[in-house]
Length: 109
Image 1: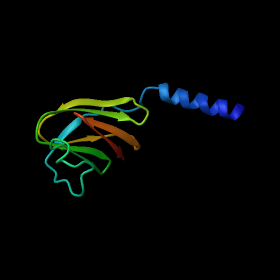
Image 2 (image 1 turned 180 degrees about the horizontal axis):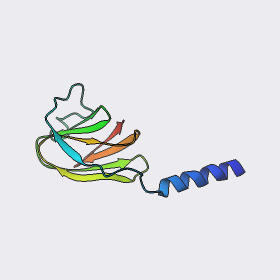
Image 3 (image 1 turned 90 degrees about the vertical axis):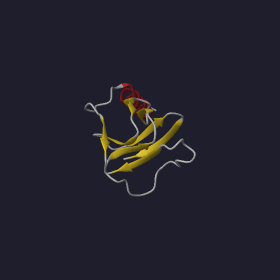
Image 4 (image 1 turned 120 degrees about the horizontal axis):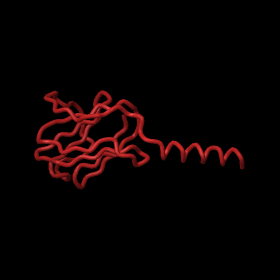
């Protein structure tokens, strides 16, 4: 019982602690994205979400609002991306939730 209490206390402390990440910024890129998109552009208004070399990559045909959350729901990045390909390099590996307009996709780095 005591062990369970300690585990729950640690989990709550980690969940409420701020994300220890340096300021992350989206960068426009001209690099060709190889591989399969995590989303189907036909069903997502032309938005494609990729994972490449520790970066989250989004390709869009129109300006879109993007939010990236940790698996615990903490906001990591929020930006409006212009048409084209943009990437976000994160300092920590893990699972992130990427919300682009009405589309939400899980991305593992």
